[in-house]
Image (cartoon, rainbow, N blue to C red):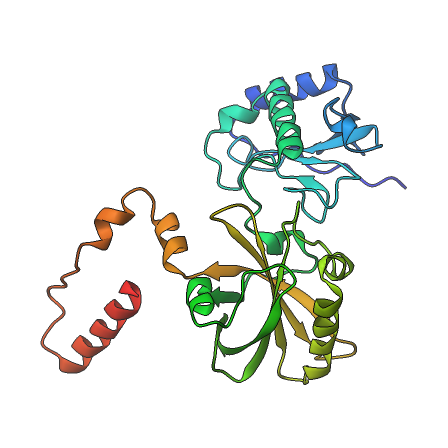
Length: 309
């Protein structure tokens, strides 16, 4: 017996949603299995130059138009801004200008721009490399001060180089440096068109010597003590990309899980701070009204120092 179709897309703009559905029908798209969330139709001509498939799917999510649609295309794995599920990343997840995907013509225009970026390689670097890798987690982060590690001679920014670091772990955070109870190895590789999506992809981008070192990490894994592998590569003159992997062996064979990397060096922090970073760096912070309680004052001072750091 056929299953019932999924509910209609939840939206506060039904009129505009109907216009989008009308555009899709005119372009030859039909709902997949009667589900108005997912539409399959002919592939965009620009995408057809990158993959042999002749169809693509557009996923209209609950909350449209405040949430942008997803575009799913097979055969694009290994390219920039394509996640492991074949979702072509056309917009940032927090993109606020929903007028850029209201109509099908808008979606096609963004697809054309995405394909042009693939050809030129001049677009935004895929800095969230862990999102390309399967599997990945978001509840643990690797803290990496690349400038400090380079200045200390612990990391060398040369393709083919590799070495060992130490790491400490506190709830949710791996912090890399010269001390700590965990093993962390870094691998500097040449420029990549897209981050590795699987363990096999990762192994292929390593040199012979790097590959031997990477395989040796598995021998260091203990049941309750994982090791870390950090891939680093240049995305241009001033941008370094990275992929963090936690290699563990809790049950059965060892597994590699991707972790997000949070760069803590000054150049990256200034980049995140926006155009006012230079002016703010010359300012101090004064805190008033913390109370007369010495213990509370000391705790507040520690919190301020941690925040300022």
